[in-house]
Length: 333
Image 1: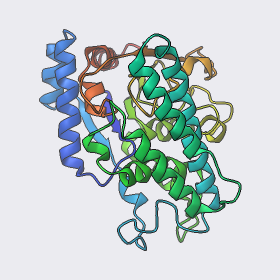
Image 2: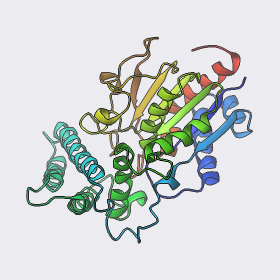
Image 3: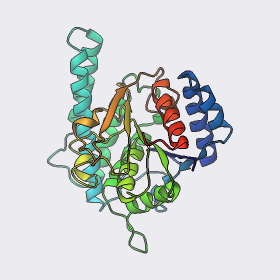
Image 4: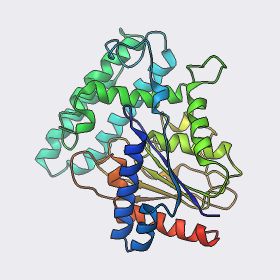
């Protein structure tokens, strides 16, 4: 059986799945060719790989009652979601400060940047007089405005407005809040995982997940433990955020799904989401001893969190090409 290739997206606004699938496929094929796997790249572009499938769940984040986002990213009353978003802002700014501190010792530009990050950290900290979801929304907008004044995020098309950054980070909070049940009682996070499980199917599957999609994919693979996964790839993952994401990820403690034969985790130092990238420090092995193997990649440009930038990198695309070839030939790993 030919291996299936499934892409899992992360945070962001509405997407056209046909366009996203074409862009992700094209970027991955480019990276495969650059890594010396031109034959596999041609097979991917020619459709000689089962799929690829773009597992889309972004529409599930739509809130019909929202009017242009004027009320903020978190409606009043959603206290758990607000708590997650507030903690996420604190951990992100703390991690950015820690990383910047390493660079700032002998460089005036980085020392100046450090002052801005300290201001963002102060904005992220809760005020004892402010409570509730709307106060978190206000703090989030202030933090986003400050962070987006700094390179490399200044001028990024993804987050031209601070409220877009807050909207996207709020998606992480909404998923981890385990709330928003539908008429059948299925919470938002469960409905998202159901989408991915349907995309994965039953055969051998190479799963390539990005951003929030890495959390979704990890939890889905734990629930779909009979589906063989020769390779699990995580890109720009927030899974290593120890204060916010790890304590809320199921199962606890965080572990490699039993069906995963190999797990590769890639991060860019300028990626705002994967600020603590070394997953192998925090993830327990499965019964085969598989743990994530983290590797740093460096991309050019302003917005390095893009999935397509990761996929076009030879260090990312090469192992995917090799895993697809091995799975097609029936090898385990």
